[in-house]
Image (cartoon, rainbow, N blue to C red; front, side, top):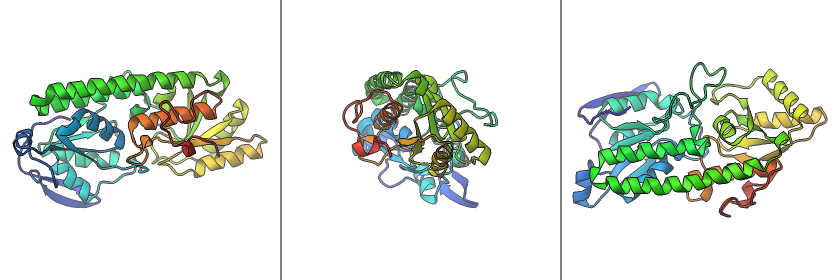
Length: 340
């Protein structure tokens, strides 16, 4: 969804009310154009949705833009409803990036309204081909949006951001290209680490049971069978039949650990522990995984690389594989990688 800039007013529905927002209104601290930014020595403004998108944009934009992310750590983007503040930030931005594939489902009308108002609005998943995308059973024909779980696929989003910023700010196109290439090289190293530690898990234990089905791309990319208690959207609810089916699978396959997620309630996973215990099989909670949101700002886990390092390390160690306790670079918080 890329559009040219324009003038006028955009009327956007938010929470049942209509907010009339001037398309030319800037959020605090944002320059109105790259030309103005260069003249004034300030930066232009980019607004993003989830942290994984914000991370890409910050790496590519460097010091040329102020990047504001709307959906913070521990917040479920499937259920997130945009606030008045979000609308102001989006309308005041020079460029907007979001993940796409209906991850930010409840923000769709707002993003469309922003685009109609003349903002460049880009989905970082825009370069992925339909043949790559997963369309899980029961998803109503929608694609699974959790593409960031496959590092190589998520790296395509870096290209989207670099191309968009180069088009918006041509004088700095070479810098955006260089930033993107440097970040993609780091992602390649991360991808190789994930492949190595997951490959160390015994074949019979390569079953990943999580709170909701957010790890499909991770499983396909790195060789794990993935089972979520809930569907890929947390708006779906797990029923008793779903829980009984998973209990049967865990006991039959002798799965040694299941995982909770930072942005999803753990009640269903706790129910699995009780169900398997009643069947004479003890399982552990192998750790807490980052699924739809990264860790706290300012921490290693609060970066995309740290998020994936944490997940791969935690999964490998809990399922009997070999991985450093503190992760690929020794930066993981030890309290997050143990077992309950």
